[in-house]
Length: 480
Image (cartoon, rainbow, N blue to C red; front, side, top):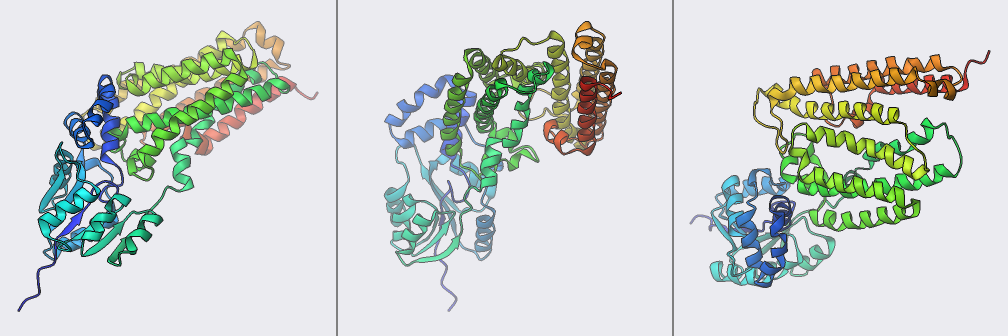
């Protein structure tokens, strides 16, 4: 006699096969694609969770190929499939979502899912599986507390990506035969979620103090509070942007590794963290003063508009990014109680416009190298726009240098600096740095975030050192 056929292996979807929750992602997708329908969410929920899932699945179909799958579990399932074992996908997600995943993976012999009437979760899932395969007539792969009654009804339990409390509760049944451990968010993942490295941009708030030659005093403490307020606000916006940009990020070779896109951090954590960060930002902004708080509100509103709409509008997206950089300088002046020079705003605006075009050009480079003329995902540009984007970016950078050179010939400079001729070096440094950045992008060697490139690039750091040294020399003058 041959070996008895192994029992069917039943696998859960959310948090098990994929490192995310498809319901949460579809709710976010609705907010991005059909914002006016978000108020309908509680109405659908009142009709039952299965109805909510069905309505979302109809309106926001997920790209199954882009979902963050659990690689360890997939390898194990493929090995099980190779033995001839029957694999069943059984999930509380809507059947449209489950069928899309099954078609993409090509592993499953059968799919059981919520159908708009019954939410196939917890005890209801256990009853359905017992009805289909009999008590202990299947093995089950799951991850959450809702899976405990299913593991009780199964012959063997496979626990995947579960918290310690869930794993201990599952082991009490005595039928756990395999564990694929969870990978909870690490401190590094949380830092990346907050984009702490992007707080460097908020150092622009101190530029008005430096430009006014105020190198001490109480204003520095006030601007430091403003810096923290802007940083918390920026983190809240970055989280919101990442949540709304999941589909685009997963199409990108580097951005797919971001905490939410990769499934390293659950999207629900981002949804909870963003309003808390924003509340902290407003509290600090209130302590700085009403003028600063008003500019913070403008920054937040413009950033949200950019995240939802403007980043998909060609040219206007780069102008908006440049405005967001310049707003930091304006907000710093408001926090310090300083009136800003139009020269400073003009130079800043052109430099930031050049960097914004540089960011877009770096994003288009992979399409050029692949010979792909398609549009960049989530953006309004196509690969053939790259030469024009490059031309506009170089022109904006050189315009900044021209404005700076004109400013240096004015009477204000003669009054502010002990040796004004030394500051002329900054014009050459700016021209060289802009040219260097665009040369690197032209060669395909530019990071798609120019700020990260600048703080890690030796040439950029050297340019910054020479720029600062020339300003210091111009301020203090020659020692003889």
